[in-house]
Length: 385
Image (cartoon, rainbow, N blue to C red; front, side, top):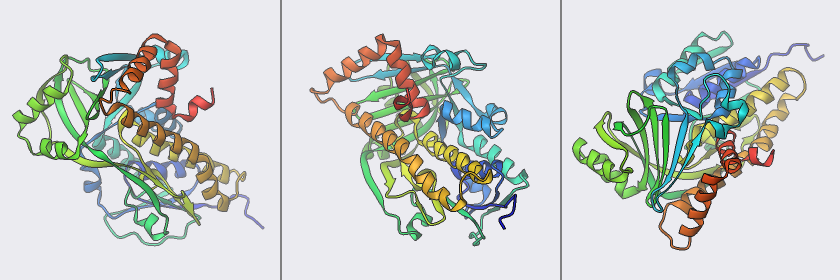
């Protein structure tokens, strides 16, 4: 006989933001979870970067009872300025473009920005306090009896490689450089997405005049910027930003990293599912990266709850996860890749297309709402309207 309340166990490999949230989501669904990472907590926390979050992430965090606690680490932005510097056209996105339900909600925002350390600190504290979660950091993981294995161990995933799952990967000619700066000329609740011929450039507000930069440029240029002194870097930055944004100070060391489009050939094998960057990676344009990873977690949460309720056999969960994530992944990777290819140039044949596209966005509120819905909930949202 099958017990009326069977105990389901999951092993999560990787305690970065995605692995940590996946463990909390599975525990919320009533599973017993073992979470491991070879890095100690201090190393996991030391990453210097910030993330942009959309309403799909806010909805998941609210479901898991994390939103109120994480709000202290989140800086809302209520407008997003899209500016194509090659054609000098600008489109502002505001609360009205979210639609009436989200625009009138308490604390309404187009999106939020959080720095890595305070975000992951809250998640690790929740993990350590949860009675259904065993946490093992800083040591080689031990094999655990598990009905489900969640590989959330990054783009170079040892779990994926051990399973023999290949990837499709296209490196971009661009790299990305991140830096924390003090800026004048922008409101503290305003984010910027700058479309420049050398690559997209995000300026994300962190409050008190501080902004996180995500600067895409040719790899050689990023390596050069990374080695400049503070004054020379600020001079280069001033030349890259629109005139209204004036950098005053560099607040941390710029760091460059390569970017590529990556997609695993399959998202599961046996009892293992690939979650987050172990299964996919996109260009950071539009701030889709972590939101896409956390939509993986949202799907895993839904399926784990179905298993716990007896509506899905546990052995069928990995295949169901793979089937349900493919549409969002493919459309998001295609959309981000298309944005980079169309806007990271001065191709004469594309300039009129860009002028027309931005002119229509600026004049047609329904088109802005559709575009923001795609950014907020993923491109699949457009197919559901």
